Amino acid sequence: MTQPPSDQAALSLARGATEPPLIEQTIGEFFDAMVARQPGHEALVSRHQGRRYSYRELQAEANRLASALLGLGLAPGERVGIWSHNNAEWLLMQLATAKAGLILVNINPAYRTAELEYALNKVGCKALVTMARFKTSDYLGLLRELAPELAQAQPGQLAAARLPQLHTVVWIDEAGQGDEQPGLLRFSELLARGDAQDPRLAELVRQLKADDPINIQFTSGTTGFPKGATLTHRNVLNNGFFIGEAMKLTPADRLCIPVPLYHCFGMVLGNLACLTHGATIVYPSDGFDALTVLQTVQDEKCTALHGVPTMFIAELDHPRFKEFDLATLRTGIMAGSPCPIEVMKRVIVDMHMAEVTIAYGMTETSPVSCQSATDTPLPKRVSTVGRVQPHLEVKIVAPESGAIVPYGQAGELCTRGYSVMHGYWDDAEKTREAIDTEGWMHTGDLATMDAEGYVNIVGRIKDMVIRGGENIYPREIEEFLYRHPKVQDVQVVGVPDRKYGEELCAWIVARPGETLEEDEIRAFCQGRIAHYKVPRYIRFVAGFPMTVTGKIQKFKIREAMKDQLGLEEDKTA
Image 1 (cartoon, rainbow, N blue to C red):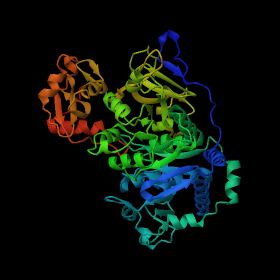
Image 2: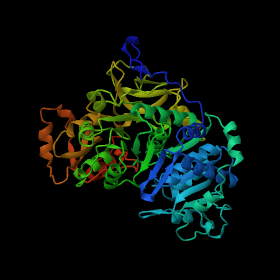
Image 3: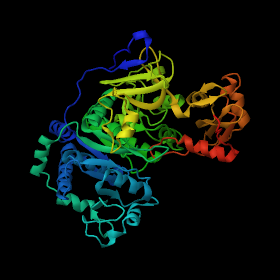
Image 4: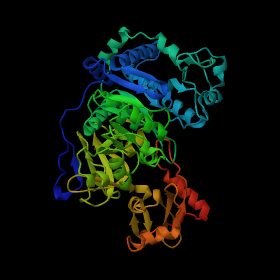
């Protein structure tokens, strides 16, 4: 799968394999070819909606929706937002917009009015498809706050002062159920307007190109406004294909996808990995629920399961875990944030996922640039993020000089190749900051590479702690503390310190039914790790602040500790 790293002075540079060749089709073309090969094979199971689609049925519905979107007056290249948790409509939108040449804009369901207003206006969405509500979130209520003009508007004719480019809002109903919503169009009604044989779709197949932008995802920056990473058919279709290759997916596989579709994990590692291999997509629920995942894997005989580490931990530690037969599982992906080695071992043994893989990447690289294989030796699989994907290059450079570092030395990971985004939407300056003149995407992640090309992520450049001149990578401390038998989860951050510049702080979640004391943790560290790596501050917590994609927000832990301890940054540094 991967060529050995460059042996030029044993530098941390690796190039992926060049076979099989890259796909130079659009998503619509590739999907239609797959349908022709296996029209009756099950393509999608949406458990919480009670819906099942064969490949032919999914194609027909996607074509109807593409036709209906064109019927709204939308033209290729225009932007359409999707603001929803996981459901069949999400996948239909993904396929239909690709076929119609529209750019699908993924909007985080956690967004509220200010963030939604920013996202819709930043990229100029003409239409928005949204859930009505989810748990305590009233999406239609939030929209009406932003656009009170909906109350008097005809569907498709919105003219809102704060959302000047948005003309159509569609809400996802269940086959005509629910109250009428003034100014809004039902999804079921929109779908009914479409023609699966619309001749415009055949014409678009001839016009659309693989390099056309097809998707915008907002990066959840911890400072400043989110940036709209713009991805093409070529970016995400190839990435989905090679991800599926690494998992050895076939039409016999059934992949359970509890991760969000609005993020690359669900949309590319999930949907597109399946559709490029003729496998079956299984959505257990609209939002993550550990018990529902376990039930779905058993009932649907899933062979693969995706998740971020916190999801796998929740499944493994569920009180009813042992009740479920998960023996059909074979593979899947753990990604989204660093994967604790001890959790990985439990997934392999207790969940039967002997061929589970680790994937690493970022939205701006479509997203995966490194992945382990199903046959990667276990020590490498649990301690690295694998090797570079086909048709890509990765290198590790000194952040200060940009020089490629030797094997084993930490530096910034950079990626180059087909997967690098088209750019940040309408932001040439930020694009230039991220992608250098030679086409390398600078990830901001600290990593090492060994002589076989295996990459290990040791942290974020901004997360590295410098204590009294010593560089400390929180990931190393976290992996050590995971070995304590009473520790379920742990996050380590740096907090300001007058004497040393920074000190370490560990937030620890104890295993269910266990109690822990600070002295127990310190005793566990004594004599096993260097004294300066032992956290000065230890707090026991119920959970961590995180995004809905499962990424830990370390900056929030740091801010909480600064407030709690009355610490201030050293402004003289």
